[in-house]
Picture 1 (cartoon, helix red, strand yellow):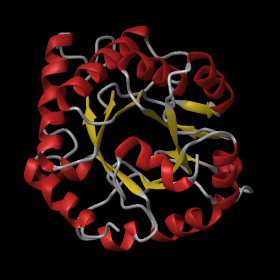
Picture 2 (picture 1 turned 180 degrees about the vertical axis):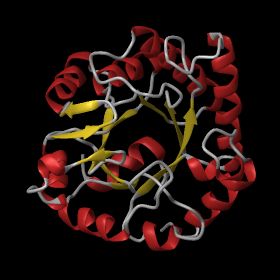
Picture 3 (picture 1 turned 180 degrees about the horizontal axis):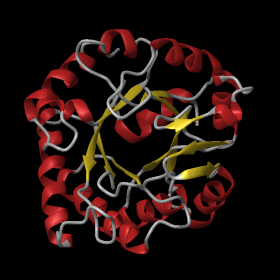
Length: 273
């Protein structure tokens, strides 16, 4: 699919803004506080509806509360099933394109959940090579994920990070950012995500520009987009995934603030073709 058509096919707009629906700690995670699946769904729907009211072009459901995250293959079945159920209900409630992200780097798990939920894409922390993070040594997931995409035939795309946040990339320090972006695109990713050092951290503009020059796939801002830096960052980006800024007072654990959503979406809309 040509670059200009990938995001347009999903979202139907130039420079789409994707809002995060962060789930509370799910059953089995250390922070689990006794919420039933109905409780989890209720909070997810409130955030998703607030994001829609604020004008986002899509939403992405993520098990952000399940810290510390497990590696692929160790992620609990209960997390996968809950995310799938919640993502499906969110999609039906808001009528917006919906994605799934099961941490950490649970791309196979995310694809399976996305197919069940009718979601359109998943995010991948590390699609090629490897890195070291809180979860330990995290390996590439593209071989498994690309085969699963083919097997399930669910039409699920992959938005894959390069030099993903919350990890050390010294293992691949001799591999340039540009080369990694090229390989991510070559091995099947539908879009390339560039982020800052941590959740909510501003994405370095030089990284965005370098990746944009290197690939013929859409490039997404993966963290830290605000009304103040939107013009600077979106000059090199084809869309953005936003979580922290959309929360009340910009605090990740707070509910979505509709007015903050509106401010950022309007800032991006002014930049659209």
